[in-house]
Image 1 (cartoon, rainbow, N blue to C red):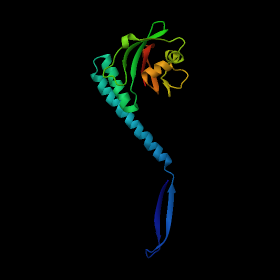
Image 2: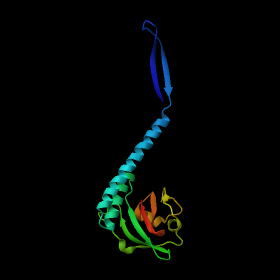
Image 3: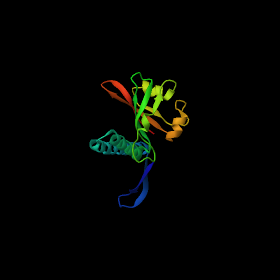
Image 4: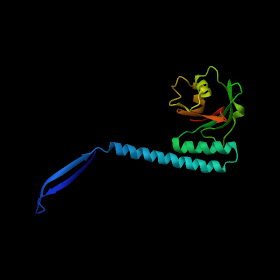
Length: 171
């Protein structure tokens, strides 16, 4: 609430009262905060775009994305998985893990999709899949969550010419 108090004066300029106006500025503050967040996200995307222009390899791309995700959202891990042709498994292509200097491929770690609710959803979805708390979400593999030490997980589909190839994720 913003309050403005103004004096009320008579014809001789003597203060004979006061006028008080109270305004609810909650909506304005919300709009200003939303604008600040949009500006921060725009700046983040611009920084990422500049780094991606200079990328010469997949590790460079993942490193740039991982560093921006960490700076903007606090995520410490990033990964890129490709689906098998039959979509029954996904193979790790590259990962940037917390406290690791460089992205690595972890020897092409394979994850079986069938029977894993989270991976089944990622494989089936055409949209971003978000898990707010992987430690308690019933869809997640708790061993993998513990290995990555991730709480919030975001997986984005990678498509080319309408064909879903894999997922880029962060957490």
